[in-house]
Image (tube, rainbow, N blue to C red; front, side, top):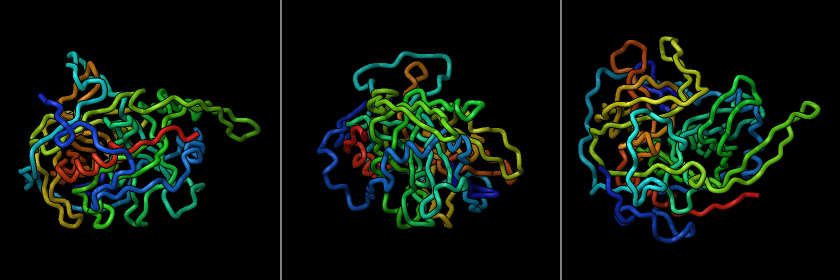
Length: 373
């Protein structure tokens, strides 16, 4: 996650489903032309190469994405109040026509995990290029879609997408390098989908991305003569294995949401409450956040949460049901804020999901991938 602040910010990395002119994922397949403000690019790294790159020791050494940006905030007083069109929603996978049971516990969603990538135009063998964010599986026509922050897929300093990008849902970090858990497989990026205003203008009101991933594989790593060797098997589509969160846009700026992710970075005062080894969550009611002109940030929503770097890209989920572990994606962890000047992050925020977000989502939700091997 980009560290936005010693004061503000680090870019962290009853709903009714309606039809995709108002919400179902229909329309043509991947060959359909996307709107001109949607940027869709295939990964420069072959999928098998990306998965094979992330040996257990490299995954263990990957660091949260933190790029040392700086802003200042005094209090929380937002300006974004109105949606730009009627609300819409797409139901989570498996709940298109069902009602979820209730649960008194907060069960962590299988859909959320960590993404790993290397910095572009740099030596991928250099550990300083090994980075990670958070992300979540989301509903799509071909059950192959991952939602995250745009800054977790695109390098604005190099003006290109990251290399060796993979998603591991329900990731758990073991005590030893060979114990990193990928219980539902590893999913390599095929196509990145982001908004032109982030890619071209670095506008953090558009800090969201949807990534089409190939069908997953499970890897068995073994070290032979000090070199990692692997055996793999295909495990099918992401959405079939872990499900996918619903998607909603043009909602109220004041919603009760859960946020999930893998925070690991320290607060500006040096305190480091998280390790990034396991998934964490926050819960609260969103509100419009302050404007930050330096980063074209004017339409974020946020709530009280102390997440730090590493949580970038994790989901804001509205109407989350612990029994089914599903809800509706209404944002992604983008920026961490210190709103009272005590050098501790106390809010996280997401771009407000509006009609522009839906355009990017719709383009991505209709792209087919399949197996890569």
